Length: 94
Image (cartoon, rainbow, N blue to C red; front, top):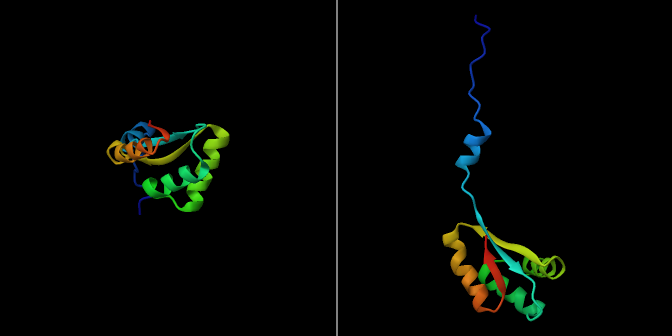
């Protein structure tokens, strides 16, 4: 009986990182124009947030100046970000 252990190749961190597809983010920025109610309703409508999730994002934006409200591929996020902009919110894709 052999006591040799089977060789298991370990992936390098670089190999793993190159396999992970980088996601983009929609970042919502604070402004002095929109009400909490408008921001919450818009996030629920276009970002598929629950009311509670949208409310939390609105408070984070208010107190921190910005908040990531959606992640995904650029192709997925572009029309959502455009809807947020059409609703007069300040948002960008990063």
